[in-house]
Image (cartoon, rainbow, N blue to C red):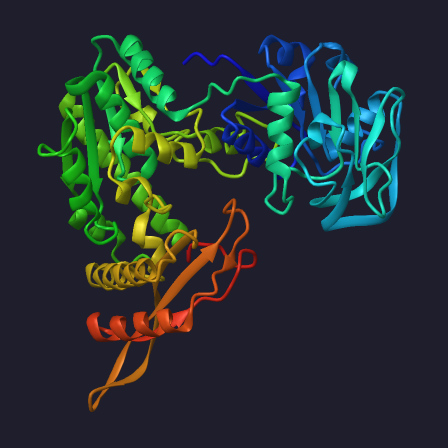
Length: 515
């Protein structure tokens, strides 16, 4: 896909690198993350209209600290340094960075100079998010100070003639009240962007590019029913129609009615022209999982069995030209292919199926998109809202929301309890503010009383969290009456459950999922 203008985020290991790229894209400007290790020549070769240097955990004066050649500031390309990026800019250009007499962390009142293009339409006194041990004691020659705090004499600097700007705080986080305006100012007022990154044009140009690339070839897509694979399948169906075959494996660990919902959209009576294969492999997976209690073993069994089922279906189809995957941009970055941050996980979409299927090439139509952009692309493609706004759901499905052994009866219990919880959250209007919520089945059985009879049944745990990045999370403060209603419904409507718990633990120390 042609991208007329691109801003590059040069990553020095900061935790907010993806957030910076997302904020720039929210300004309708395309943005990518690259590691500082690629060097200035490779950065210049990408022909960016602007460069943003991210934060990072290091001190610029430490031996071996991440750095760049100072020639990056002579390319004539606008540069914005953020936190570590601002300190590095000053350090390389002759300023002085040292340990701050007082560490600044958290929301801080910043006094800005309205004459700076970065602070156009920003309040003179604005709240920003600080997180630094070092500070700029003396700006580099030729730079003027454009913002300060009570503890930090240099909170922002600039050299407009060379279009070099630096801020000591983090404009990309929501705690910086007018941060989005500052980034908007950088990409429009400083870089002169037109704002040509829009989802309708992305979908249109992507469909056209896929049509040209695939030609008369055959495409195979593993459809999980999640947001990413569904949007990828819809885009490919628009591009090549019946040349696409989607294989949907129901491993018996999906949420209630999920299989029916996927078949309704992609099946023979759905809205897309494609070949759709739905494999009911529930019994096969239940047999493999019988007696298995250890979480990692469950994951491994499910992953391997999924590949076996998919391979069998692929062999029936024969050789295909392309294997389609719903890889999205965070998968690429987290797998160590994009930025500098440590490899967070070996993602199921960036490796896995290819070794087992006879194909020539992989197509990943969404690999440039963040999750929120993927959802928007889905809407542009006409996918129903319940599918587009579907919550994150693990590949092993409900197996990791059932503590201990997985049985068909336990799956039924957790499906029913989960459906009730999701329904009550939506009824209370909380489905747009809580980022993830589900019911899990604990392995605990306890004594209860139902009617006049003593019971010895299972406890269900309700989980609901708020998070911006899924790296950390807090338990959501769900109103008591919503929990009460849900509890009453679950113990009355779901057989063999006599107790409901609410999980109040954040991440860390817990994970968002149960296993």
